[in-house]
Image (tube, rainbow, N blue to C red; front, side, top):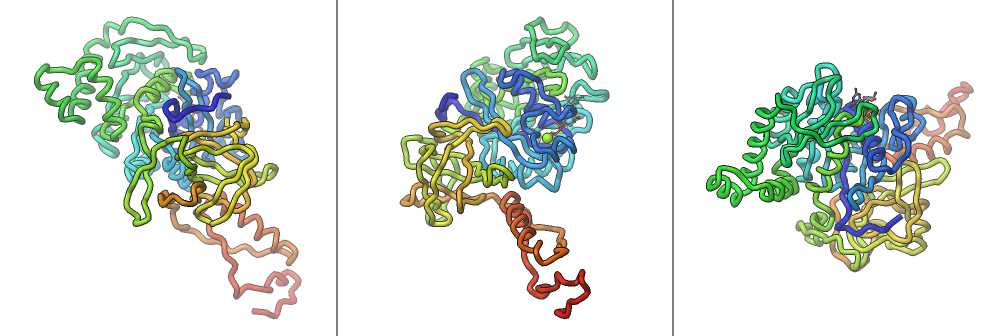
Length: 455
Ligand SMILES: Nc1nc2c(ncn2[C@@H]2O[C@H](COP(=O)(O)OP(=O)(O)OP(=O)(O)O)[C@@H](O)[C@H]2O)c(=O)[nH]1
Ligand SMILES: [Mg+2]
């Protein structure tokens, strides 16, 4: 596996309401890019990113997981996140280390509660966004209705860069509004397509949608607005560059049309990501100097390391797995790194890339990339690793405060330590869980024997 430079990386988080099809979409992206031989399905428990037994049994993502697709010589890092409200803290964590969100929206139901929540979380980070309008093959799927709900609830700058060909069950491809090319897919879930003429009954709608796109792009940039008034339109080059800049500045949110299950439109989604999402080299990571003033940190792999830990997994076999983004410098296997948050030195074993649960050991992981390392002794989520001398810090992920509390009582005193160890692990994995011991309840575990005198 190649060590990628920041210029050839795109980091995206798939976020959205539960069952909008994020995991199925990740699976289709891995399939069309040739990263897997078999097109995994959520309903068959065979996707790369839902690998946990509970996730497979429940058919829901319960924790963020990482995968990558190589596409046009670029490495697209994909973080699949949970859409269920209780686990949304992992979506927030993923947005923190992504350079763009791909907001997945069900074309039947449109914007839902968690869509608005992830949109708001992306707003807080001023994060670029693409919208993947998914499940267009379903009955009552409708672009116009879903788009209206996005414009009402999220932003009026959500703008289609494609139109769907065919509706509901006959959804079979997309028209690219920039190139005016039609792509029609085979109906066998292979993700294979051929270029075709725009269906004659669509030309009027394509013209109108292209004009709306041109206007939206012009609106996002004063110079382009002047050009637009002069010429009455934008050239293809201006449109392409303006769309990229407007997306990177989070002023325009391009919408693409897909069916993750029928594997339609996914290569064009990957194209849109590679073309419009800024690489880490183009999007310096936001940090804070010693006076807590905003600064940015360039993804320069020649500099000393700056690494942010966004997630910790307590794996029953591998132990603690620390997932990180290399902001500057690089993380090298079999080296040591300083934990600035905890003032301790960490020894690194193998640094790995993750394709779901499959690990690939790398000699190093460079600035801009996402990776993981097992068995660090002190490091937890939100820690910064790297250069002791640097005054730059990175704002932590804000996790929601707990809203429910439960008491746990061990059946026997011998279980106390086991419960405590397991709860600490859960707390490490999900910082929105808080565990504490109530001192008034000490020694009460003998209640089962009826001999308690301590309360
Ligand atoms: N018809 C149709 N079904 C789809 C499509 N995409 C996903 N599904 C189905 O929708 C259900 C949910 O898909 P998931 O990919 O698990 O959705 P998710 O957004 O990851 O859900 P959470 O993990 O709970 O947030 C599954 O039964 C999928 O097979 C699609 O394009 N068309
Ligand atoms: Mg999922």
